[in-house]
Image (cartoon, rainbow, N blue to C red; front, side, top):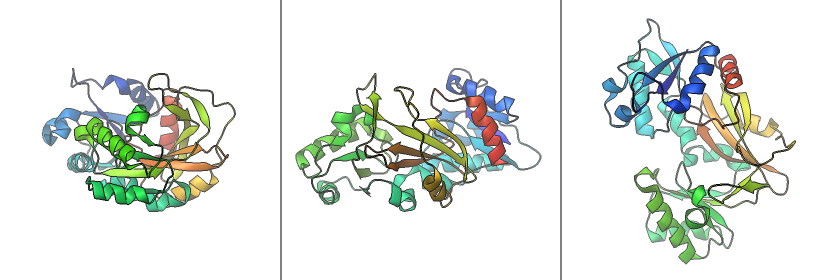
Length: 296
């Protein structure tokens, strides 16, 4: 079993510093690791990216823990490692299933806010989608990410029927996402969540959210999503989320959940577990020990 990390931009023979603690915990848990060059990977230079990956004699299971990839980039990662006799835990189709909200929406629809989406960025397409929400507040994201740290300018729309505001938010969002825009636009009904704190840097409201890691449909670990604010004794009831997780088309994924103001719990989104970050508060040793138990 091998963990695949990205190397440092400044030295291809050492790990990206942000993953140093994870690597140490992985080694303590009994995993091996290899380094790839992220910049070469996204530039399509696959052989150069994998030049320090040692090929095992027998096929080996691998888990990527690194920066987010587009589905095409992940396909290159998957195929390149397979040629090295390492098979990543999620196929390209499984990666995309949790990476793009529209791909998994049907699986989580019963526990997540109403959402619609478009790959067309013209005014008519956007107006058609936002009309479905009436006067309700909505938020904007692409197929993967929002600009939640630019909450008032590029994320939150107080009234979906206010098209001038919609257009302003969409225009700013597209500028901020730039070349990083993932596929298209997603509009989601805004749901009032239980307030936790005001983010110290962006000023956005942060709410009681948790990140659940699943491996082979089993819970690896539940983390407080935010490192700021006092969670107190709040703990989510997991039975409904565990049941939904059994139908997700992925072997390693995250489920971000949040507590509504009325006390109910919802799914915010899914993510591929290989590119999902651990909160600063995470016990990395416990995470990798649990991962090993649930993955093998």
